[in-house]
Image (cartoon, rainbow, N blue to C red; front, side, top):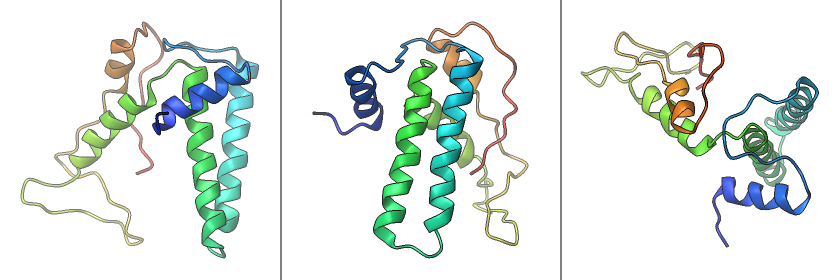
Length: 141
C-alpha cells in the first residue's frame, strides 16, 4: 500500500463513495462550501492545541488538516503534489542570489526582489484544466 497522502485519501474517498475527480474541475458551490467548512474546522482544531499540546494531539490534528486538504484537492480533481512542488519552487526563490533571506519580525520569510510567483495555472493546465480566474500568487508560507 502506498503511503502517499494523495493515494491514501483517494482510497478513502473511493471506499466511502465520496467525490474523486482526476481532472481539475470547478465544483458546485454547496460542495465547495462544505469542503471549506471541513478545512476551517480542522484548522481550528490545530489552533486549539498548537500552544498547549499535547504533542500527539497536535500531530493528529495536523494530519487531519493535510488529509482534508488532499481530499478537497481530490474533489476538485487537483494533483496537489504537483501544485505543492510548484509552490515550493517559488518559495525557494525567496532566497537571494547572495543567500540573503528577508524576514518579518516574527520570523516569517518574506518575498525578496528575486521572488518568482508560482505558476499554479500552468500546473493545473498540465493536469487538463482549461479555465478559471488568475491565481493571486499569494502564499501563506
